[in-house]
Structures are given as structure tokens and as C-alpha cells.
Image: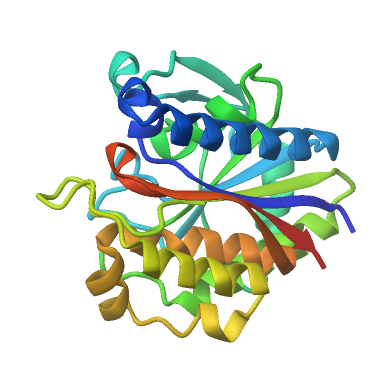
Amino acid sequence: MTLVFAGVCSHAPGITGRADRAPPEQRDAFYTALGDLRAALHATRPDALIVIAAEHFANFFMNNMPAYSVGMADGYTGPIEDAAWLGIPPRDVRGDGELSRRLIAEMMTTVDVGYSEEWRFDHGIMVPLHFLDPDNALTIIPANINCQGPPLTPLHRAWAFGEAIRRAADSVDERIAVVGTGGISHWPATPDSGRINEAWDRDFLARLTAGDRDAMLAYTDAEIYRDAGQGGFEIRTFLAAAAAGGGRGELLYYAPIPIFAVGCTVATLEIA
């Protein structure tokens, strides 16, 4: 078994770009939890970190929108957004094209996966890396689930993608870590931006940390859109990480922080 770590966290651009406007006690507690996630991740000494994210029309658009795509390059750059707006300086990120190829080949035995040798990271990956890899020391393999352009992949297929990631990780000698990153309830780029449905978030997190697959997959997209906004579709990244881990989870932090425009979440997931 070579999957050595699994976790989830939020990735909204306000987390870094509007840090000075958040209630200090909430911001600091959230940042501390992200630091705890970083320490737990690095303690497992991963050779590569797969970041399962939902990029925001930065690399994929409606003329070619894969349900799943995995990076297959030796290096990446980010952020694609204005660095001053996001509050994250540009960086070159190390990849491993050869390792990616081996992982993708195994994933493709059960899930049709797109792949790309060109990928510019947006806030969906750069915000997590800002906290989880501040020294830019990790080898990163980006994985994207389409959560923006309908028709969206069904939740049970996002789960199957996570299982494929786990199987691929266990098939190689390298030590592989996985972090799923997205929002829970949020309404980005709408008049409701900043709205957060705390009750819905906590119910989802209870299902996630219980490792209750059937409960996690019971949502319909209509229910998610109604109760968690279009940003809630990003639970697919959390589901894939949960499927990769295969066990229960431990919630390290959750709070609705409206100026960050998302229910801010940090959790670790068991490796079953």
C-alpha cells in the first residue's frame, strides 16, 4: 500500500486575497488547522501529492471539457490569476511526468481520464499549496474534476475516480498523498457571494467523517444547487478524496467565513 495520506480543505480565493478582512479569531484558527494538515501531510514523507481540484475555466472550457483530467508534466506554473489580487506570488511547481503516466495508465483501466502536459494552476490548487507546501518542496500531480460546466459527472462516478486514484497509488512504489480541495456551500461570482449554508455543510461533513459512502452519494445536483449553490458541486473533489482514503475522517476545522465566501473546512481522512 503506497497511498500514505488523504485529506480535504477549502480553496476559495478570498482565503488568501482577503485575509486582512476576516475576523482574526476565525482566520487564525482556520490557518492553524491548515498548518496541522500540512504537518500531517509532510510527516508521511510523500514522493508526490495528487491535488484533486475543480479548476475554474482556466485550462478547460466548454469547447473541450473532460469529466476528469490529470496532469502529466514535469512542471507547472501558477497562479493564473493576478498574484496581487490572490495574495500568492507566482511559482514554478515541480511535477513528475513519468510517474503521472504510470498512475494515469492504471486509472484508465476503470475510468476514462483525460491528461495534459500543459497546466496553469488557478486558485483551486494554488491556495491549498500556499498553506500545504509553502516552501515549494513537494512534487505535485494535479487532478481536475469538472464541477463547472454541465452536464457534470454523477457523484458515484466521482467516487469511482477516487477509487481509481487509490488503486493507481497502490500500484506504484512511490509514496503518494491525496488532497481534495473545493468548496462546500458557496455561491461564487453571484449576487449571493458570501452566503453560506452552515447546516448543509455540517450535515455533509458528518457524512464525510463517518465514511458513509451511501449518504455522501445520496445528493442530487438539484438539491446541491438549491441548498449549497453552484459552488457546492465541488463536493465531488471531497468525495474522490474520501473514496481514495476509504475510511472515516477527522474534522480539524469548520466555520462559515462570509468574507472568504465559503464554508471553510480542513479534515484528514483515514487510509483504510
